[in-house]
Amino acid sequence: MNNRFRIMLVVAFALAFGLGAGAAHAYFTSSASGTGSAGTGTMQIVTVAAATAVPSTPLRPGGTGDVTLKVTNPNSYPVTLVSVTSAAGTITADSGHPACTTTGVIFTDQTGLSTTLAAGSTTTIDLPGAASMSTASSAGCQGAMFSIPVTIAVRKS
Image 1 (cartoon, helix red, strand yellow):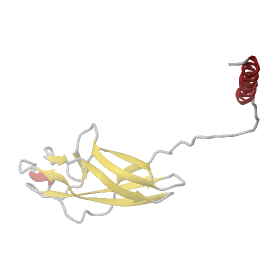
Image 2 (cartoon, rainbow, N blue to C red):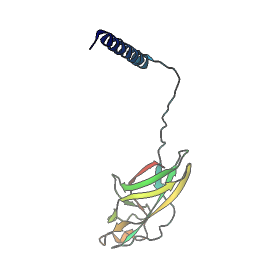
Image 3 (tube, rainbow, N blue to C red):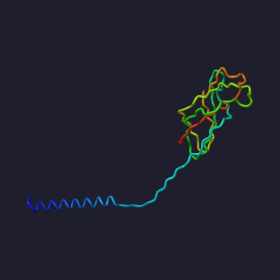
Image 4 (spheres, rainbow, N blue to C red):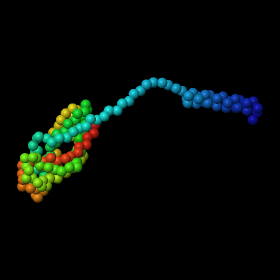
């Protein structure tokens, strides 16, 4: 290789390396400015209460019956009810049935639900066959309404 070609090769290499380093330096030292914001919201508590509606299928000894709930969504957006499960506490009969000492009532967890609750609304929910009553229930339980402690789970729709 002649010296002239070597010098051209060294100059070409130095030039290519210098330009590449300059581009890399510009890439890694570039700057910009701007503003941004983010916020988080807090879901208000969705509540559940006993419904005054009469279940479409009443509870009888040895059978199953519907459970009705009144669910209130105070949020400004809809939520979806996804489950209703047993909560800690005792299932009791209403005060008009003091002789109902053994209720024999059991609640069956309701999962996989997909009931939309509109924003700022109260909705009555009917859970078909969600309660069962033993044949060992007290005779004083006839015609009673039962309070069943439950926990609900919702998610933003």
